[in-house]
Length: 592
Image (spheres, rainbow, N blue to C red):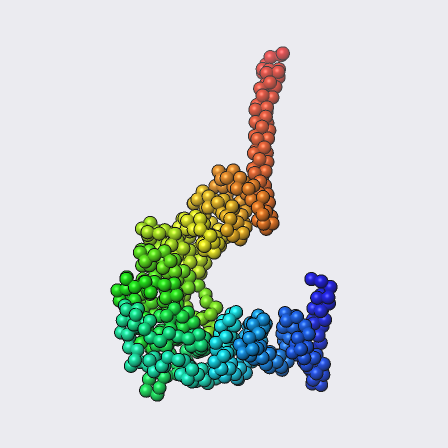
């Protein structure tokens, strides 16, 4: 950090402290003076772009944290700048402003809205800006260019945050506005998505005959962008917020059918919205029946069914069902397991199914989380873990592709609560070691290898897990010493050495046979190209060598004590014997 930046940060901290004092003062005039002198001047500098963007955003957030009134002023200015940048990028073609727009959207939704939500009710402000964004979507030119350079993704996440912090009434207003624009702007007839037009059997028939699905009019870029933004609204609404019908005589099936239609075309935002709808509306069984009817049909000849986006979408739907404790999730779980174990539909489909378990078991930032009002039943991960692990353990011996099964097993183990894993450490430890070795040969599995290594380290840190480690010490040490030279990820090498270091505290009688193997592997790591790995290798070698020095000292001390004790014992008896011989014998009644 250079001197000017350090001075700037110190000045900002001073201004924030002054603002805090003024805000907490009894004299309200101090707060007004601070707002006029500091806040307004800083906002003016931000509008005129006289400071670098990152410094400007940091200053705005720091000054805004002084009080709610100041943060609302910051919010108002940032909203205006976002709209201006959006128009410049999408209408005037100034794509160099795209990065600035994305940074502003992330700052607005991730920091300002979150702070105001924690400070109090921000629903009205969030609703107004969400409606303002939807008003801009009525312009076809904006819709056409909004997907460039990641703007659509940032705008979708902003919309999710705005909807999630709104009240149910305000969410209904946003839904109504977005629904009206969908009905008016989407090129394909929206009447198709009414219940009477899209019965359950239609989706199964469409997947059995892909020509039927593809014969429908293709979606334009504008349609897909609009559906994506509408999906972000549906993803973030509360379970108590009623979904808009397509007409007064229909129910929420319009939303489900709309997103199911686009999901079957491989549109992932639609899949997220459909999964959220199924999770939050258990009474809407039509959507679930439509999805399960597709799985129940015989589609072994349909390659469309086994594309990555389709499998990922079904995993999201399964996650929505599992999270709320719906037994119908078993059909999707069985579908994914069949793809993983058999691999008869190709390696890509099997790998997508294996990654589907990561979607189901893991935490998601984009949908199906507490922030976006998902229905979450307690301990759902533990229940799914106890169901999947026995099947995957058995499949490791029977599967056609063991690497795919190990990848699925790695996702389930690493995403499950650690307490559940440690409780069954004696059952899964060998499978964890086998999975690490199997997956370590392919660079695409490096994240799964690292996750499994973290699970192994968690078992090692637990007192109960240490017993399983000691019982299988040679196998665990063999795995860790191989990972010391793992070429694809530095964190794997560093963590493996840390695990070996912690194992130096295990009983000496257990670890003594593997010390040469450990020291040889750690010595190789001393030449690693990453400094962090070399430092861990030095600590590890010192820990294990220190153990050897202690043992040598104890042995030498033991030998010395034994020698002294021998000399003391046998020397004493010798002296007594010699003394007995040399001592004159005195017999009673006689003189010597």
